[in-house]
Image (cartoon, rainbow, N blue to C red; front, side, top):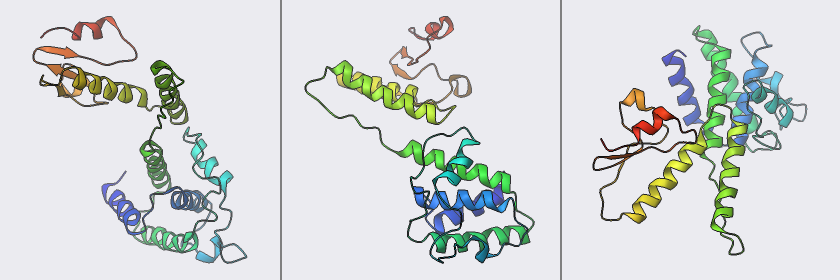
Length: 225
């Protein structure tokens, strides 16, 4: 994406606080609807007859956009339809798209992809829940946590949340088991080859690598260097 366009999208997002499910639903719906319109857009074309809602905005319209990008997780049950400020956001966004068009900067495909990525960011920011239940074993508690992570990965193809969760859990265990030892955490979800790092954790000359798919070449890294 053009960097100037990206900065403008970031500025719009910050100015109008487009970070929650309702507002994200609005801009996703409008971006897709703009594909079928002739510019400049007219605000009234996106206003429901009641005047208090965005025309055509609902769960189905939003999920249809997300499915095209492989995202199956539901963003909002009401699709932002009942969110306060949806109409005001719609009008601001229509003006924003018209401004981009007047500056020959409008790229609806790239803009839609950008907003979908922000939806992925929103899903990724939602906390995982681990509820302690004395009737369950520690293994059962962690199994429940891992199932949550796997479901999140299924809803967001290409994401690798499980590896990151496992890495942080291993790091926490090492820190508790070796409180007096200097432990270097080399970062989660960072490719070894691009950073030239030896693994995920380093204790003196020992390297520890966390993975869900061990291989012979990977095991070779897990040795004293």
